[in-house]
Length: 450
Image 1 (cartoon, rainbow, N blue to C red):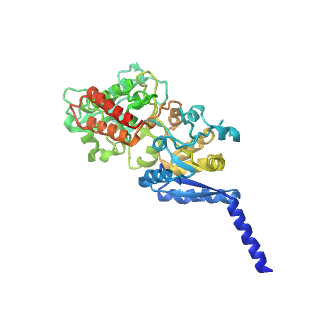
Image 2: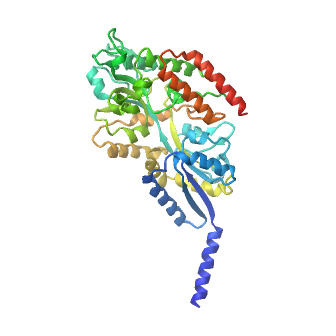
Image 3: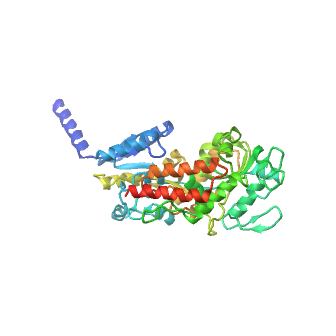
């Protein structure tokens, strides 16, 4: 009798298992592959699997260095996972046409989007493809400045709120825009003799402090401050946005003429911590994202504070945005079940803790206040930081995003990275002519990818 009961139990378990829908969750295109996050993600999976009997989530974590190739191989072999994330715009853009439009799933589930900024929901709409994600974790960008360097120079600090003007050292009130940033950055660029970059005796071969730097980003990220754009238009043709042409010249002049922005040789030097410029203590103003505070600010002993992005060419500030989400693959055989898992990860009970595990701010408006208070208290307990600008910057995202896709994405990336490499390292670089050359090379590449 016992054997018969045991057999029935085994058959019951097997029947239950066979009835379950398996959802594969692929992690690797963004955060989530480092050791401290793995156990936490598995705990979320285990909790979900134990909470019901209809769906079984299987977690697949692939190291970021191999994740793109592994996912591409899976897709080509007809073995795509159901759910992928967290991933940013760049990760998603590397696989055009792979992701499912969530609009019908959102409508069918009557999913409540009211806890998200509508502009942020629209941020995940891709023309021709639909709603490819729902906001999960966001990494706004803004100005971070070294308070000690400003006090030492006796200069007024950048405005702490959008819409506020800048008051110069002479007491003049001017718009906080890229021109005001340039002027301020030159005053904060100092050589070994104590001369700033506005003085006749300034020696650009002996710089010991720089005024401004756009850090840990590529050329598209640097140029977005002047206006949002992309190197491809809606018809698939290569373009150089007017604001980006202006910005590229502004950056080159900042490196080689006005000297307020680190160039290639200086940027990789020990004086600027071999690339981690702001943490070196020798950069007065930086354009940073929230993730930079979380990863790279702990060695800086100087006081620092946050400020608004300056207005771009059209008079509007642009605070480029990094945002992570989860996407369902078009090849998923069980999109409804995958959507149930996705919305579980985005739930108020789960998303706040999960976003913190990945180092991001929850996209849910109801969770952001507690997150920022806890982030400041835990990460920087000895500093009194006003985090208001972090949330405020979400109102000025770049659209199109600076990490949006383009034809032959990796090859195009190699072309514009080579352009940036030369801009940083060649004093006589002809920006306008080289931009024309870049556009022509990109056009050939885009044509070959049609």
